[in-house]
Length: 152
Image: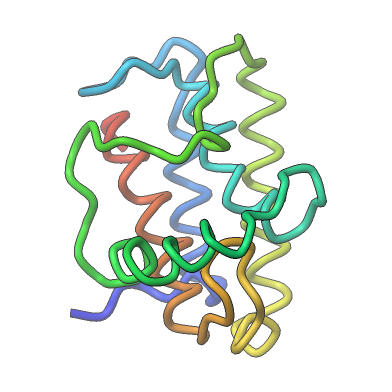
């Protein structure tokens, strides 16, 4: 089953509409993050693409990630609830809901505007080159998982 294509305006708008139904007091159906922390957590995927704020993994770690983690992240199988996450994705400090919501929506819009051609064979921070389908699956699956976590 192919995942919806986050690079299309229809799917990115649908995700944005789901984000816009959240409010600062939205409660998770599982997990410990607040809604603002979840939005910041989802933005990390995009920070790894657009910003140089996270250290790159060394050769050994990148080999491990490509060999054992990549397929789990880029395949079409939905994530299970309450999985462990990479250290860069752990958000423990308080975040401002509106700031994080707008930041994530801007990343989604930027990604959609750049399009799948920009991402096809683009080097990932942790997994090496990914094709457009792998990028799509990574982006969409993560967002969908956490929006369902908050009931939207």
